[in-house]
Image 1: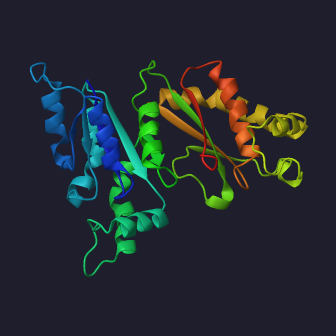
Image 2: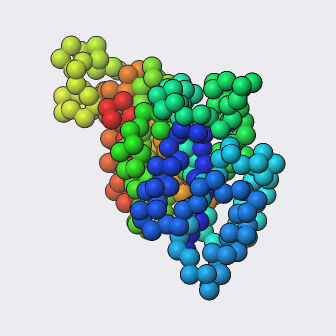
Image 3: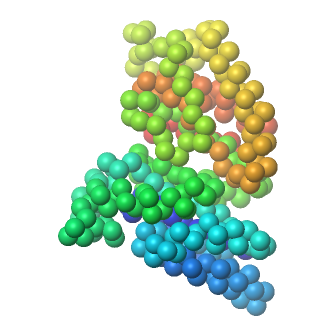
Length: 284
């Protein structure tokens, strides 16, 4: 039996996640008042309840006073035997503005006095008590609905043993930092295959680019340094009740160096754990 709390800014994909969980047999509740979490935990922990795994959505539609009390409510739940996970979805403000404009839906915090952009920014402040406690954060800015569903299935509904799930994600700095990254490495100082005309149109997945970067001594040194850092500190993250870690590696365009480095590190850590994933934001 398990409780999953889904939160995030409006338009980030919370309903999609709830639908995925519902399809997997979870009993789902949208917009549950945070003050009722303790009562819900009592109910589903009861042997006689007969309730399966439960997923609830808690967002800015809640009473603000309840959101302020969220940390103390979660600390209370930790004292129970009910496994609880908090998942926070978000996207950059420009993406959320575009989604609301396209759907023509009203933002729950907007009014005659508060415009859409102001409402989106205000929502971040209201949900901060939840976002800082999330065990998994997902940036949906560049995801389609299909990609979001796959991400939830791979990271949240993985039936593998309950060990730390490690995601290596490449990205391009020109498109901004991924907001769901826990650790970020900048590999723009490494030799760039882009300046070789024969390699420019290729990616870090292609053999020619791999061969080029394999030959560079500083590339191998950085890969080794990152590996040693993660080998040393990932056990500390895991012992601190972290279930998911996203390691983001960025180069200028997210096409060559960061892709190569994610693949390399993914191969190294896959030999030690079955819960290792690789994602290339710009290639996806």
